[in-house]
Image (cartoon, rainbow, N blue to C red; front, side, top):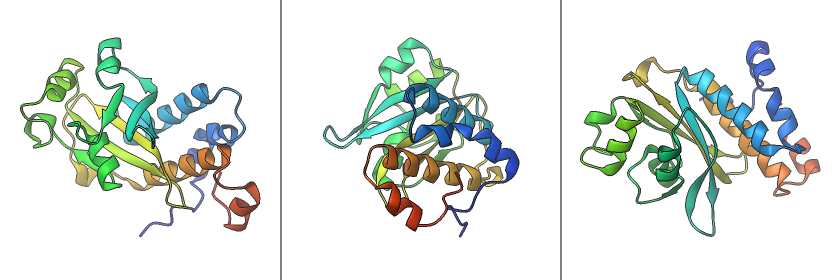
Length: 190
């Protein structure tokens, strides 16, 4: 199993400077968009969303997106557990969900979600939950591809590290973990 707290290599570390600002950011939206851009870059995707988990409403809401039409953003603005999406499945399972080809996936066949994904030019999708080192689910990264993908050719390690680091940063920012405790837990690689 990969050490998800291990610092990323120097090249990737430079790309995630937004994470360092995220804890004390005055413009969280801009920093979350930069983090989403990093996730898109890591996965080699064409577009993506970053969704926040709303515990009270028990749903995901989009807080950052890249590459989607206003119509698609409205359609997917709130995702509940029973929605036919990879992000809803990742929320339920608390683990990554990867669909190599949306046109053949049990998750999408015959659904309105499939129609909207096709209209958006999407052929494959993966969703990775943002779960902190303390086990708190903050949200989900979803990256979308215009061409079908092969999951076995996909390297998840950098995205997994990024997901934990984003969740830890946001958890600390929101005061769910006092800074002294996060320092005691050891370096996070940020």
